[in-house]
Image 1: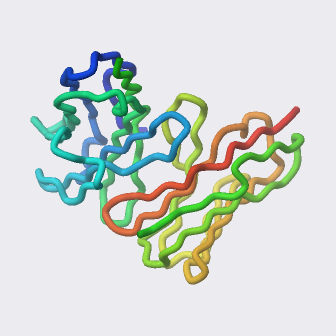
Image 2: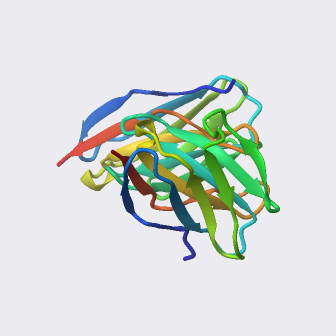
Length: 113
Length: 110
């Protein structure tokens, strides 16, 4: 069964450093998402991406964040200058059609020191 | 703003018991509602998706219902097993995002 993959599974970085989290969505999907889950808290929506542009973003997704689909398979989330509070599990998801299920990747656990 | 609440926050039951997890949401204008399972430190596994026009969905020992007008959904687990121990998340799709509840942490004791 097709699945969403994410790399790396874990990343440790110093505050102020840039990080890029990578995702490979399911190949025929058209809608892509990033979510985050701070330890012990709810899963929170960050951004959705369709047709090579951001379709919706939350108030969390400020100028420090950006997303890109650099080629036909990868979908990336960049955090330009990480803060301690960016430490969280980041999930990528993809969806095929308008009413379909969102399929989630296994997540990248980011720790900012 | 759509808010999703799950009750109870934690539940512990003996193996074999049938149980119900509850989810409520504040705005009935949703495309669908989805139940997920999350094991500690792991990703999200989709269990059931209910479209806004549907009333329920079933998969094996799981049955999820949706009452959109009252803003409620339930996840029924029959004959619970220790392997069902996990956190169960409810999420609604109001637009192009998903809003999650905080989850119910289920422990099934052998």
